Image (tube, rainbow, N blue to C red; front, side, top):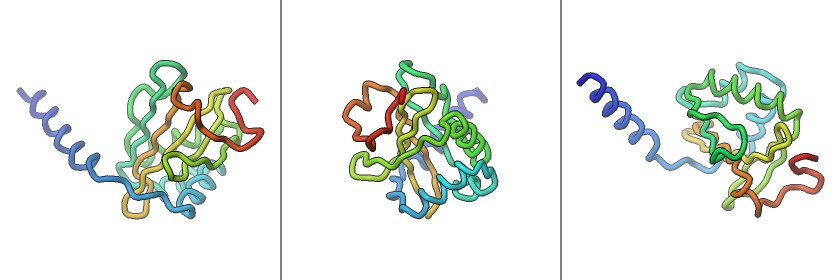
Length: 147
């Protein structure tokens, strides 16, 4: 019975936190995030995130991606800094559904990161990695997977 109560408690918490729609990410916040991550500054990256920030990945098994959500500012920051090391600095702004997102090439794979903001801080980072879902993405010239 304690296991069921824990599941219900987690489900309630997730519904309360995940139902709130994210705010559009302002350019200056995305700039601060990218600068902190690219410089490898863990503390500055943490400062841009909410305490319960979450990284979610979707690859549909087509490419490498985090299998579970990464939760918490410190864990998310560490993941982002390490992911940027693998990306070798290949980051470009792109438009996805009318909002600014980030295109990242890591290990020859194009990934798109949408940023969710709550109360002026990054709350969610959605990594879209499934190449089948990125076929119509307009990336800057010279910026592409494998190149």
